[in-house]
Length: 195
Image (cartoon, rainbow, N blue to C red):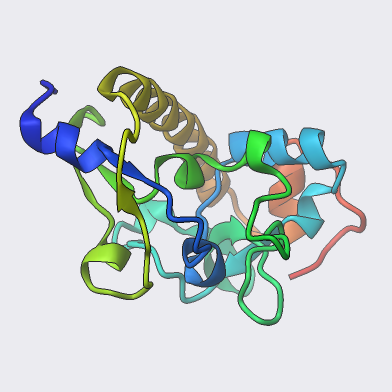
């Protein structure tokens, strides 16, 4: 994908520190995200994640869902009862910023992949476009195209690895529960079950 003026404008925005994105959006995770978060926080994987039955992400492709004994789910970061991200602090900063998921690292930009999983375009997130959240980002220096594309390629690679594991899990008989899936991914959990 070539750098264009439209892409430069898209990347030239700074976070407004409003924390709107940390209050409403389900943060999609891969096993790489979970690994970074568990190492950084010391919190076990089963206490970091939730399996969502009705996520705010596009799971039209059947291969994006985790098939479990109680239905199909999407893997996301756990939220507090009030809907806030578990890492959102009172001062609107992230307690796990250095280890934040790739979804958070690219927000509010979405990466468009082709059928070969190559990056073909960048666009503003749908939750910004349709005013699902009241993002207060501002025009500023933003991110360089080169550094953003480095992150985009890392995200692509991590999703490809996770999707291979997900497809392997989904091909198994007797699907199991949340912790069975996390154990399958290589994470120790605090008990042997959990929905």
